[in-house]
Image (cartoon, rainbow, N blue to C red; front, side, top):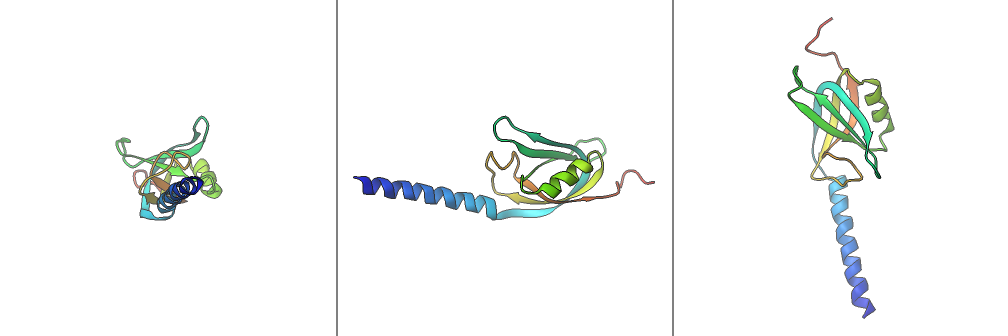
Length: 121
């Protein structure tokens, strides 16, 4: 009686581990987006995640929402430093996400400060 139960639980755990590994380690796409960094926040009630937005248009009509993993401390610090400035974001898009990773499927891997094409000095 116990053996079928352990086999069933083992299969369930293995399937969940495979799904998690696929979502976490297999990227759907990667790329670069640029815009004015309008928001970076640490949000959540029980599990907090880093979430942000950039505006990709002059009027703010195109908003790109993204998440940052907690392990990427240097990316978080750069985003906080560049708040309100024009930035270039390198991102990885995943097939899906889990609530403890972030709200979006887009995860930022690097940040660079850029000169805005809208305002020239």
